[in-house]
Length: 65
Image (tube, rainbow, N blue to C red; front, side):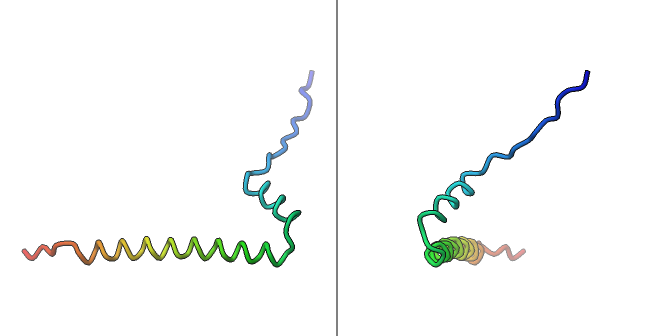
């Protein structure tokens, strides 16, 4: 007796679901603007993290043995 074939259906991620709702509620230009704004936020956070790391590096005591 053979087992019936398994059908795997991937569940959409939360991001995919939110993008689907977003596409229904907003025009294309608004979606693009929102994504660009969010990408800018993420880039600002990355730069801030880099600044903190660079400042910590510059403030480390120098071992002059």
